[in-house]
Amino acid sequence: MDKIELATPLRTIIVKVLSHNPKMLTVFGRTKEKDLFFKDLLTIGCDFYELLELFANCEAICEKNINCIVENTPTAKKVTDYSEKGIRRMISHWTSSKYHTATIEDVCKEIKLHIENDSEGAFVYNSNANTPNRKAYNDMYILIIADFEKFFFDINRKKAYRIIDEKGAKPNV
Image 1 (tube, rainbow, N blue to C red):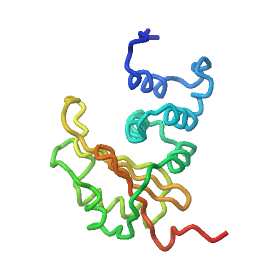
Image 2: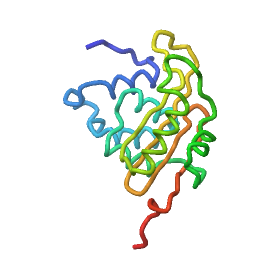
Image 3: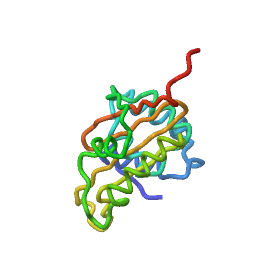
């Protein structure tokens, strides 16, 4: 195992913890539960959007985390228009790079389908995930659907949108 110094940036440490074999993290105790780790990092003052990006990049978003993310989402703008045009308005920047997830039209169609079909999960979209050039500008967008909640996040601009549809309205209890 690679050694890390105490002066190592917190971001690097978080990535190592999220990417490490959970069975070997007994020293970290609760970090085996990535949703609790997410919540604890928020509690000590980490930025919600930076954490969401890290968790997405480490593929650490799972069913348990999704509920924790939804519960801790900052104030979100309510959106009722989730047509392809409405979705396009939430995506403020998309490059024509060969490293993008797909064309903007295809991304908007896919997001609309996920919303209409209540496809539970986390869906990550990159405008320029240029792995050979890590300094290349990339806009990351994340769609999270859990139970009756649907959120769309613009990571770089630190914006959250809560998607409201007639099917997805919470039942009166």
